[in-house]
Length: 307
Image (cartoon, rainbow, N blue to C red):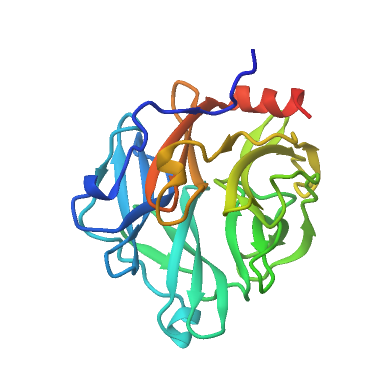
């Protein structure tokens, strides 16, 4: 019998606006990381005026979370201060060399578009932003958890004026100057028609970098989101080792299909628990937080043995 690569948690959705300790419209698209022995989520929360704010949530079991009432005090970068207030969203968190690196998207005012920002933190209370954002239009940035050939490396998603785009790998000596950019050339599939981008940070395995990603395709009624998985070369991560043509998760449940944006499963965070469980956190319909589970081994095997 066919085994679903990701299993939805029976308590889904695990966080909804009515479970939050304050009034809000949505809670979705959280970064995720292990911190002090707990799962820490970096939540994207829309208040009822549709402004976006970041809040933390902490859990000892990865399912039941305590959400901070106070939003994260996340300073503006120099670019954001010079350009004016920015709409910031979809944090991702990478641990490296004793520091936590945060990436996020930032929509700048007017016609400046969407850029990638970065910050560092040691405690998820105090954040130090890097001074500059990427140039537009770019988003869905994940930083690799170690240097590759002596350089920092990232996957991001440059996009055109219609929002379409794919994943690229770039390198940097200092997290500010990026280059040596190369695309990740995914095989053509019916569920990847418009755009694709990295989900959580790459996971290093003996078989390659395990990368979960999203892709979208049009149906007769909406642009549907899907999650996929692939293995990338450890030394040249723009090169695909295996990328199954089947998706690993699609919007099927009511909490994924009905909401602010229908038919969306969007992940930008996961953690590996001490027992080996891989918790993949994802937003359902841009409205609520959900959880799907597997193991790193099972997902690597899925990539290796499926075409």
